[in-house]
Length: 399
Image (tube, rainbow, N blue to C red):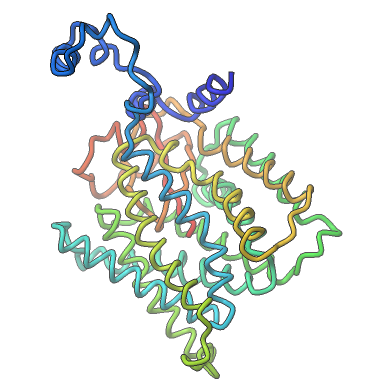
């Protein structure tokens, strides 16, 4: 019964090809007793025809590459608030985000080019830096500054509002139509936000405002990104965005005297570990998402959208002893339900290739109506894979 429940849940957000790729739905041709592969395997094992034996364990048929990539996105992106809290113990917020962006961006860009990816052209640098300013400098910078006065679990739950904000911005700025299911997701998601922030929550209003402002900036960058000419390779795109946003944030940190009074010798081991984890998780998470964007549909590649809040709340409680109330758990569940409705919305609109990684790591929301034609067609994967079959989606980031 439990297996049947989870199978049904997966079918709500995964296409048949995704289920077959992960091993949840058998490929009839591959599992036919008369298929050459099964006959050869049976002969080598000294067994009879596959049809005469018990079915293979479903564990053996799983695509472990996809499963490990999904786990990497869950851990990397879900642990971001906890890593930021650890680093903020003795590091200033703007300097922290700037250094993390420089390190992670340089690693991603150098690795991508060394492995044969096309370097960004001069025409791609300016729009990439602009997106990086919105996402990293204004988005992550504001959110990290706000996290100094609110629990990391609450920051993680607030970050799950990104697809909801992006859907609203897409409609307000570009009149992108929103399917009814996504509208329901918006209502449910904002109801959960109201439950989390209602009077009596004892949360610092200024810290919450900074985190929400960061999410708005991040969503704005993610909505604009598909309309710009950005690099095709996800590592190159993320690397350039991180480097551009980090450079601007570094200048802002100097102007605002964020480095004033900072002594490297006085930085605690907890902060160094937090910075190291944030950098490592950026490289691993962005790489894993880039693999998923080319392998499975967007609705599967971005399931971390509604796993992240749970991971953030759990790590905040486990590592820092942050209180977890019944109301907070209920609000988290309601927000996650709203996000799930949005990212799993399907439409019959013609599929179009979207940039595989528009904003660092990609939330997805699906809209109907006419979309701007991408200026670059990624050659790494067919359109049906990147766009998730009949779905047309925009990938959004949060990290």
